[in-house]
Image (cartoon, rainbow, N blue to C red; front, side, top):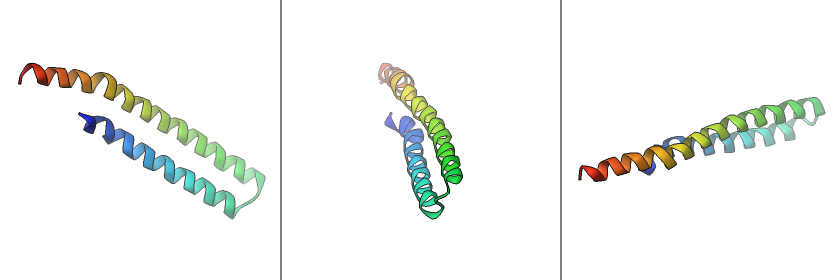
Length: 76
């Protein structure tokens, strides 16, 4: 039953880590404050979208996986 949650969870964590690395590389490559602010804003918005995905993953783990597991136990 962990498969349902991890289908969302693992790609979210990987995408967030790639976004963090891209943020670091762009800050190191271009030190102008305007560009740094824009990159941080992009990363923050992306992080909030990933947070929404992680919340959905938690809801799946908490409610849906439990109900599927209980349904399967009835018919075994």
